[in-house]
Amino acid sequence: MAVGRDLLGKKNHVISIIGDGAMTAGQAYEAINNAGYLDSNLIIILNDNNQVSLPTATVNGPAPPVGALSKALTKLQSAKGTAKKFGEIKPEGSIFEQLGIYYIGPVDGHNIEDLVHILEKVKDIPAMGPVLIHVITEKGKGYPPAQASPDKMHGVVRFDAKTGKQTKPKSSTLSYTQYFAESLIAEAKEDEKIVAIHAAMGGGTGLNSFENIFPKRCFDVGIAEQHAVTFAAGLAAEGLKPFCAIYSSFLQRGYDQVAHDVDLQKLPVRFVVDRAGLVGADGPTHCGAFDTTFMACLPNMVVMGPSDEAQLMHMIATAVRIDDRPSCIRFPRGNGVGVTLPFNNKGTPMEVGKGRVLREGSRVAILGFGTIVQSCLEAAEILKGVGMLVSVADARFCKPLDGDLIRKLAKEHEILITVEEGSVGGFSAHVSHFLCLNGLLDGNLKWRPMVLPDRYIEHGAQSEQIEEAGLSPKHIAGTVLSLVGEAQDSFHLLNL
View 1 (cartoon, rainbow, N blue to C red):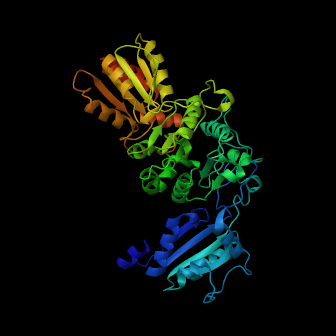
View 2 (view 1 turned 90 degrees about the horizontal axis):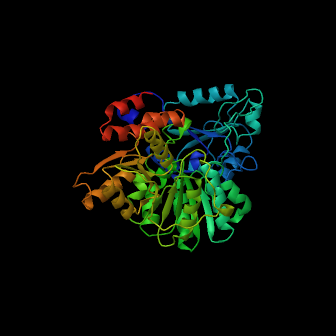
């Protein structure tokens, strides 16, 4: 933006604000290096609140920041005085000065008078070049409950303003994240080669629980997903069994490494793709819409999606034993459905590429991938209420597909509907490819895909987002009714 302003002859100021957590990512330094070389006027505000590693819902309170950057910023904070005087650049400057950025700081970010004074001074210098103002802040400043528990106030639900106590809906089941962690711990107790990697999200991915038991086998690399993937690849190359747990939308940042450093070399990294699908209040930036599409297109990748928490545990056990290629397991934000769990949370390895039929019917088959299978079963109950019995199958694998299962569904039914909580190009695309190559669409079979709409879905409750996406049980049932010629019943159902 600063270069664009200069090329157009504009005189506005460009300000970039970045947190210390984001500064652990390589792109930040690529940009700073480029800014120092181009020498355009640019104000960078580094908000340093000692959160290089996010303390999200940790087991024993806030996690200490990790990495050399945290140490460097702490060292800068301890420098005497609140800010360097203008014009004073010492021979041994900060890392920012060595990259051609004029450094000012550290500055007390809660002293508004000083902060405004510095910003006005920087603004008034006509040819300053790139400037970084190192601002020290405290997370939750001014609100004691937040200051005392930054791990509990990173993202909030409804809470008591006086006490800070959050009101969360009660559930009889744990989150899929917690089931994953418990299953991985059970596997790791019997296999010392299992290690875990996360990118500053020990709480969010459940791996803090793992780290409590295996502190030397869990690695927090900071907010650096690209490095997390290649770090896991290195561990796999040495014969370990790495589980790399990253949110679906964050894994997009490390996709080049997934393709080149892992899949191309057939390294058995196990990717645990949390927050797959719609994520509710976190909105489109955290929505895991694309992981099935971008993981399943890789030649060597095994792609799994559990329909419930027990299936998740079986898939963890399966991934442990996949030693000749990479694999990934995707699961959503939210809680399990309450099925019976394997003994001691230790799953049974599955045959790779095999799904299962959950419900036998006629005329219509619904093939789901992932936890959306639960909605398919609910849709089947709705249809049973109007006298229609449909088959429901759980694909379990997007890659490799269960060809025998798909052939069976296609040949024994008039209509096949595939359902997934993912984008165009994912599971349904792989099924359609299989159907076409095997001539299964050359006859009378009607096939319809149900996927997320080709747009970003804004913030809202997960249930509201599912409704907006047209993937609720009543939408699935309505699609069935419309395909069998009961359009009026379908319209009535969708408008209840």
